[in-house]
Image (cartoon, rainbow, N blue to C red; front, side, top):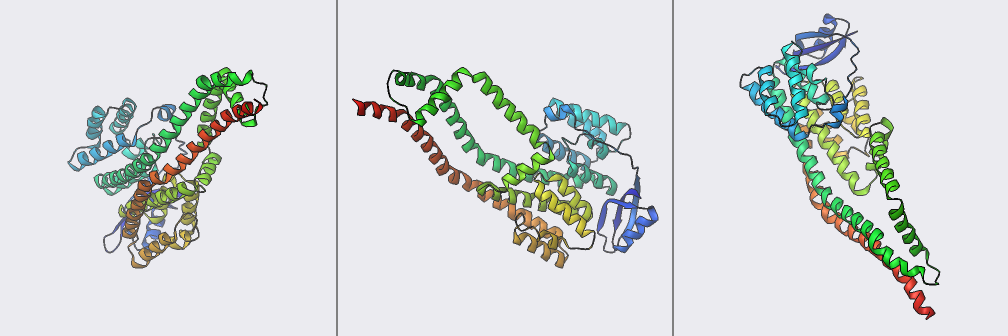
Length: 405
């Protein structure tokens, strides 16, 4: 079996493109003809085992979504205006302020000048350009609609940026409060409380457990601050390494889907991304199986990824997407499967997925707006409990002394 990139059209002129395994070109044309499509172009993909490694510089010198959005939007405009890919890349590399991204674009420009396809050049940098980006560009190259594909990617990235900004914005307030609490706590334990706790040493009073705990915590911060700092740094690095492994990703995904408030956001964000990307890929003429494969590699939550890959394998056996999605009610809401089913029955799955994306994006918008008002009382309770604990730890010995007097 060999791999082929193809473009095809049905009787009504609807385009379709993607990657398919077949014995030869004739076998590929026969498979597509069985689906009601006529081949317009076929390109053989050589079966070389290409292991794409994410370079260390790509990990350390990240490229922000904003930079990629600027690049994609302007590249789409330039190509639609008639400029070649090479000329467009040359112009954009000069305008890019991120030094690492500029070096990447210059390298891609050199590859394109040598005759390497744009999509293959992008695939060398998986930490910057994900599967969705590369495959959409490949579809545009095959079908001669690169500017349209880039425009679709731009819309997708804009929606993703908007979603991330809303979720990040909602989490800034509690993060600042928690950080401030930690700083105040450290200052109290290392500078203020030692002076008060020194008084208790001269008292012949048995200190309660809470006071003894505060004294030990204060001593630890004063005498072993280097060890504690190294330990915290080790925990952060360990968590970073853990989240890069399959087991770590599965653990994080499981925990996020169990947290009361976060669970709702995770489900709605992943549903919105799935619907938006899937709709965009279908609009570009990508086959259902290829589209699901790209979507699965784009989503970060492993439970959504596994569900979509399961959908992909079952669709190849003739099962409808809505039927498979309905088997995962814990991560896909009932309405999600029902709306997909309506789209399948009416032949408007692409439009229905677009509407679902808009619906869940609005849901995320509403949740993030109300998130601060939900978190605020919880934070007040936590702060109150912490202050109360320290107050009890300090006042209890004093009351004991007064009783003895």
